[in-house]
Length: 333
Image (cartoon, rainbow, N blue to C red; front, side):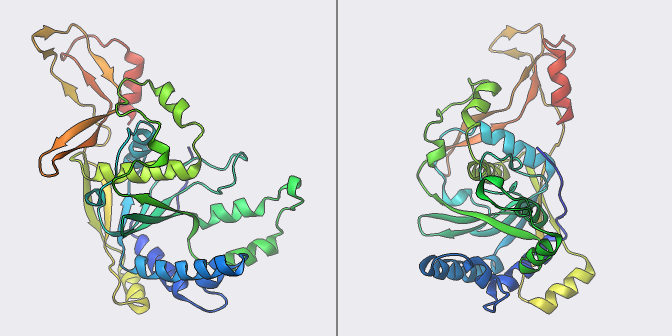
C-alpha cells in the first residue's frame, strides 16, 4: 500500500472550508454544476441536490485526522471484522469529515474502475443509517483520469487538458463514490463473515477479502476506525490551524469550526506482555498472539460490541520465544 499524502491535520479545516464553498456554488464553475455534469437530466438534478446537501452537511461536520499507525491498524483489523450491526452510538459525531494519514485502499491496478486510492470519508447520520461519500486526493484523480484506455479508444490527456481538469476541480480532494450504512443490519460485505474470526489465519482473511473492491475496503476501514476510536487504545488531541489559516477561514466563513481531532494510537508500536500463568498452567515459552476481534459485553448498552486486540507477546518474561522472526514484525508496528 502506498503512503504518499499531501494533507495534514492542520490543513484539514482549509480543505473543508474550500470544499463547502465550492459545493454551495450554483454557478457554471461551482461544485453543483460539476457534480451534475455528464449525467442524464434526472440524475443530474439528483447530483446537483446532493452537492448542495453535502455543502450543508460538511459545514456542520466535525473534523478527524487519523494517524498512520491508526490507519494501518484500521485497515488490518478491517480484514478480520466479524459480522457486526452498526449503531448510532458507534459514530464519533453525527456529521463528520475524516482523513486518513495513509491511503486506506490500494492503488488502481487496472482491474476495476472505481478510481483512485481512498484517503477520506465524509458522513451524515440520516434516519435509519449513515450517508457517506469517499474522497481521494485530487492529484491522484487527475493522474488516473489522464491515462487513456486503448480498449475504449481513449487517448491520454494532453498537458493542456490536465490543466483544464485541475481548474474544473480546484479542491484538494475529489469525491469518488457514495454509499449508505444502515443501523441495526449487517452490511452485505459482512454477511458471509463468521461471527468469530479469531480462528482464521491471516491468509484466510486475505483470501476472503481479496475480491473486495476499494469501496468495500474503504467502508471496512471507516467502520473499524469508528470502533477503534471508542476503545482505550486510541487517544485524541485537538489540533488548531495556523494563524494565517485561521484568518483565511474566518474570511471565508466565520461560523466554521476550525479544530481537528487528531486520532492516534495510545501506545503506538508498543508490545504488550501478559503474564505466563493462566488457570494454573505454567508456560515455558513466549509466543505471538496475532491481532483479532473479541466480543465485549457493554452493560450500558446491554449488548456485545467487538473490540480489537492488537498483536502482542504472551508468556513469561525471559522465556524463549517460539518464533523470533515474527517478533520483528510486531516490534515494527
